[in-house]
Length: 275
Image (cartoon, rainbow, N blue to C red; front, side, top):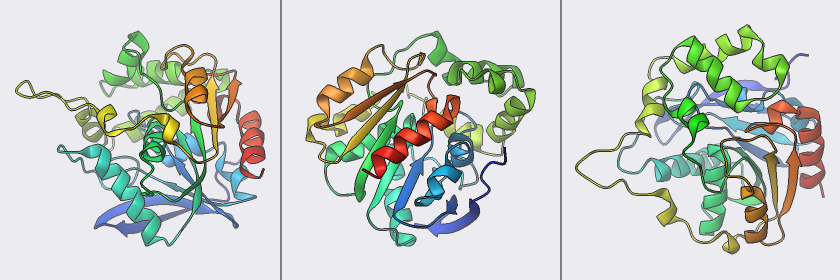
């Protein structure tokens, strides 16, 4: 299968930062927000979904600041708002306007929090949360991600945690590709910086910026993997109860169900976005 055949790799200067993104297709815009593990980028998160979505929509998949081919920067005073403002500026720079948003893991969590703030910072029409939102357990699998040492063996362990699809878990080339992205100049440092905590001050939790999910007023689809060990058991049901009118799809798979079963995921998301 040829992946990302409809995606064109582009760069834009967004708020002074060189920003990489994939673009393809025609129609109403869809913005894809990737996950936040070491080596993550738009191409890795959405390579099994981009082409199918681009048959029906005008699709954009930016690399967050610090990830992929975007500029390697980190704001120690407030990275959360820096990321949100960067995507706002990306939308403005490319003159995208109102759009559907799909976010996986970190991308989904930032997305649901922006929607909950209800300030109009992102022009969200409909949104799809893929393993995003909810509480994050501090378990052994989480530590595999946070304590990544940059080795290929550690990347194999990370892939085993994130993905349940045997054809990818057992593919050395797939692991090597993810590993190569994780050790690009500045990439490890930007992801690792999010875990730093100065001993002289309290680390400000992100949650204090976010109102209740009950304030969300956009159509929402929640997609969760039944074998996801990086979210608390039952978190997706809680999200559905909190977000008014939201829909929930449980899939066989782990933290990246859009990779574990892309055909099922693509069909479900297209049905939701086109309804």
